[in-house]
Length: 128
Picture 1 (cartoon, rainbow, N blue to C red):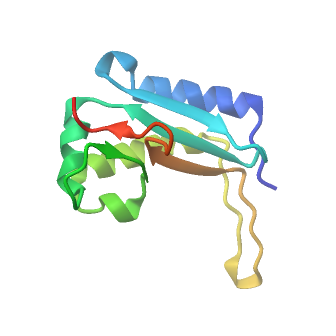
Picture 2 (cartoon, helix red, strand yellow):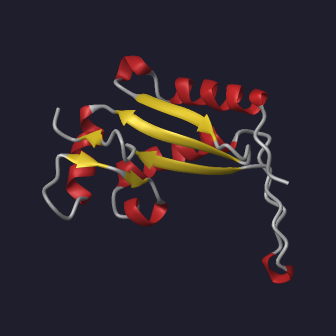
């Protein structure tokens, strides 16, 4: 059964701080869900390169973004794909497992994770 402990959250936050240091312009918040089954990472601030690459995949001219950071959104962009994979590695930790069997409708994860760029109340600002 998926469960996110305090110790796991501590490891996730340490991983994120190492991989995305604030001195490089990153601000990523990590929190666990109210059901204690998933970790959510939200990119609040990022370096200019991330801004530019994110603007390049936006369909419309926008100044704010609230979106999930999904493989489906960033497949054509090498830099965003790299950021996605790096953040995903941070959230999975060495304790992560997936022993699910879709054929028998059995799902067993150590924990679930979600990645976002901005939030509804506080969208990610594209304009520097």
